[in-house]
Structure formats: structure tokens, C-alpha cells
Length: 243
Length: 343
Image (cartoon, rainbow over all chains, first blue to last red):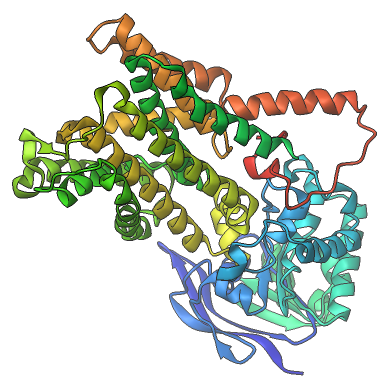
């Protein structure tokens, strides 16, 4: 196995707070890697740096062997790296179908084609059927429930056929049935070749789904291993419970 | 045929035949101004409505267009009277070219900061117009080419040129709404950072929208200058023009096809009437402000979206909610306009 994403010596400070402190981690091709840690341990900041939303003070990010540190988030997306947000960010005034089409990629000549072309429609309908959102295709996303928005946001980032997907708390605030639905989709897509890096607080979900798991504390990884190793590691318990 | 194109044909058909009824000069003059504002608010809508960037600098481009026309024809007499109109595409291009770098710089900011940056640009241009005496004549004003049209039908050429410009502005808006440009602009308006992260060329589409928008505005400025035959900096680069087109777009409905046109017809006609009623003082501005407050209070989304929403609700409750949502198609403008009905 080779690493699809390598983060090396990443640091980021906000004023006096070092949110990320010489953080190094690697995500192996084909895995569902979990990134956990107590609140404020820098998980989302790491996500934001990897995806180009934040500029790191130091360190490098490599995607599939290429140095992509500080690259524009849109460009990273075109190179196969996409992400979802903690708060399920969808476009409320666009329809469910358009929320997928808008993520389907652009070029100058495509920009002047139809808003939703036949091929867009076909590609989006396939995904909507997979996520059981097809009955809602024409409904504005504003009318969806929170859980449905989470599913929609996930479905939308798959429109570009990414290689690596970063999910920021995919199950936060959704009911148990949807948690299982989400898990099923992640597994199915992983089997189809997509690598995942997941930040999540729901420990049973992480322990079921992720391997390996990286534990972050105070902006740097303190441990990395299988779910069983993580559960029994004293350093991890310390970080969560305080020593 | 669908309702949209039919409505468009009816509207423009009515505009084309209106002058044939032998209207009085003051009515035609009023219509010329209504059309100017209809074109400008439709163009402003591309940026302020569809992209969600509330530019307050558009009057600067109106002035740039007017002065450009004056400078092109300085020292020349016009013969047929139509020559200045043939130069309008050049003026539109000039406005777009000047607008491009302005957009690249100012659109790094958002919302209220963007509004302030653009209105600053407006005052910079106004100050230049007052002070570049060699170019603009300063406060003494600049003589425009004299239009040699017969007095009986003097307004008509201007009227029809503005009808063409309005068709152009609405055509571009319609095209944008139905293409990926409109989809990308909706995404920018809703959540620009998210849009950037899913590969939407945010900078490209918003700068494009701004350039096209100010290019159209500059063309209207050119027509206005020619119509006025003499222009002064305080009227050519006038913050009140900016305010008016923003008001009209808000009143009619942002990011809709017909909203800005409707707003322009209501407000500009209303303003002229109020100005006559209340005399030469500026009391009409107070009435204007009151209208704006009432709009914000009762129609915060504008007339067109509100009506469309009410109609949509009624038809949906009539359908008893049992019908599944219709599949969205490339022809569906509802989401494009952020409303629940046809724009």
C-alpha cells in the first residue's frame, strides 16, 4: 500500500494558540482512516489546511506524491480531493438535483452550456437513486431535513469521482437510522476504490468503520493504530479523560 | 410555446408599438428614462442579484460611458444622427474592460465591504470627472454631439435604441439563468466558500458577471449623454443613480428575469410623477425612502418572488401534496430565481 495523502510537519497558530503543532500523518490508499481527538485538538484545522481553506504556517501536504501545499481548494477538488463540512453545507435555493450538478465540474466551454444538461441529469440521477433522494430531485434543498442535507452534501462531492474524500463529522446530529445509512454508503464507496479520512466524535461509529485511527491531541498525533489498539492505549485515555 | 418567451414577445411587441400612438413628448421622455433604468437595473441584477455582490459603483460606469461618447465625438458633427449609436458596442466593451480589473480587486471583499469599495470607486471617478478639465471640461460640463433629429419625433431613436439594449440585457440574463453561469452564480450567492471547494470557478463567473453588467451600464450612459446633449459631472456620476437601480431591483425581485424591469417601471414612473406633484424640491426623495422601507418590511424578497411564491403555494395546496415533485430540467427557472414559481 502507498500513501495517497501525506501531511508532514504541519503547524498553524491562531494568535497565541497553536491549533496544529508539527502534525504529521499519512492516509494509505484504500483505507477508511479515522481522525479523532478531544474538542479543540485541531482536527478541523488540519482538514481546512489539507483542503486549501487555510494556509499553514509551516509543513507540507502531498496528494498522491505531488506537493499541493497551499493550493487552491477548487484545484484540489479537480485533482480528486473533496470534502464535506461539519454543518452540512448545501445550497438551499438550488434543487436537490442542481446541488449535485453544481459540483460536477466546469470548463470554459461547459460554463455556457445548459444549466442542467442531459448528461448532468443522468449522472446526478444515478447518485440520487443510490442515496434514495431521487423522489426529492426537484425540491429546493432548503426543504430537506438536516440528515437529508448531510446525505446530499456527501452525494454531491462524489459527482467529481474523487480519489480521496474528507468527511467532517458525517453523523453529527443525525438519527441512528441515518448513521447506518451513511456507514453503508461509505463502505460501498470505499469498496469501489475511494479512500476516506473521517473526523468523527461518535466513537462506536469510528470503531466500527475506521482502520487505522489517528488520535490527535493539542494539535499533533499522539497515537495511530487499529481500533483495538486505540481503545487500549493509555495515552489516548489520558487525552480524553485527562490524567 | 412556453409562457416565458410569450411574455417576452408580448412585452417587447408592446414596447415597439407604443410610440406609434402619437404620445406627448413628456410621456415619451418619461419612457426613455424608464427604459434607461430598466436596462441598468437588469444589468445590476447580474451582479447584485444573481451573484449577490451589492455593487454601489455602477453609476461610475454610467458616467464613463457618457464621457466616452462625448470624447469620441468631440469636434465632430454628426450627420444622420445615428453614428453615436453605432459606437455603443465599443463603449460597452470599454466599460467591460475597465470593469474587469475593478472586479478582480473589489470582489476579493464581500457584502458590505464590497459595497463600500465600489462606492469609493464611484467617488473617485466623480472626482476625476470634476478635475480632469482637459478631458471632461470639469464643472463646466462637456458638450455632446448634437442630435439632428426632427423635434416632432426627437425621442423615438433614443427610445428604440434603449428597447434594443433592454432586449440585450434581458437576453443575457435569460441566458445566464439557463446556463451553468447562472448555476455557478447561485452557488456563489448562497455559499461562496463551499462553492469554491466543489470546483465552481467563483472568481471567473463573478468577474464575468460584473464586466458584462458594467458594460451594459456604460452603454446606457452613452445614450443618456447623447440624449442630454450636455453633461455635468454631478449628474453623469451620480450616487442617486446607483441607489435608484438598487432600489428597483430590490423592489421587483433580485435574481429574477422580470423583477428589475418591473421595479424600474414602477419606481421611475412613480418618481417622475412624485417630482411633478411635489414640485422642484427634493421631497420626492423622502417618498422614495418610504417606498424602500415599505418594500423591506412587506416584500423583503421583492414583488416577483413573492407573487410567485403565493401562486406556487396555492397550486401546491390545490394538488393536495400527493403529487411527487416534478423532475428538474434544464428549462426550469424556479430554482435559478430562488423562488417557487416562474419568474
